Length: 232
Image 1 (cartoon, rainbow, N blue to C red):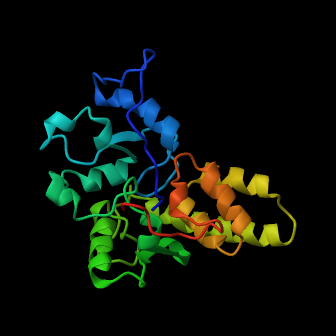
Image 2: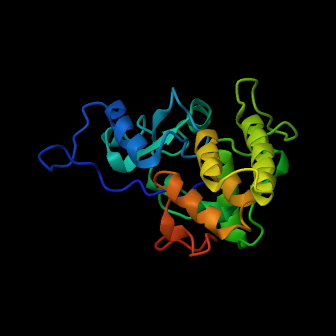
């Protein structure tokens, strides 16, 4: 899961913090900061990308138009997450891409699988497991909790893994430029998969971090390797 920097609430033309009359009005600002990517599964969503409430607006109506309560989510992640997070306590059960280095929490593997980083301690692994379950990122064809026919996130991860592996070979053989690689990754989405495939190419890792809007640079060292996030 890509760690992101959402930033402070945007300002209006007079320099004052924006007041959203409807939460949907925050979408252009979120997309400008984070790109057209789901904050959970990392898919690139050209249409139907939703302003997602971290804490459920049904339980916390006072946060319905609060910038601090917004992320971006695809239809699948948004519907599966539902109203599971309904207060500060339940929010603390999970890792969050705007607060933690969520890239360190998970391991991306061939076949589109996401698993928990075995280097985490027991408490961290439990939290990572709950985070995977929050939006159903643990669902795949061979899992007990299989995706629905409309949930193609696992399939898209698998396809992106294949593409990224082929591109890695092409880069080694000089058949593709770094610029073309980066543009392809941005168009495909799933930043964490590209970061995993190119973990042995520091220059590409740093270009990926810069290319995906809103990626938290402080979550990676100068070689593009993940490091603990300050205060996260």
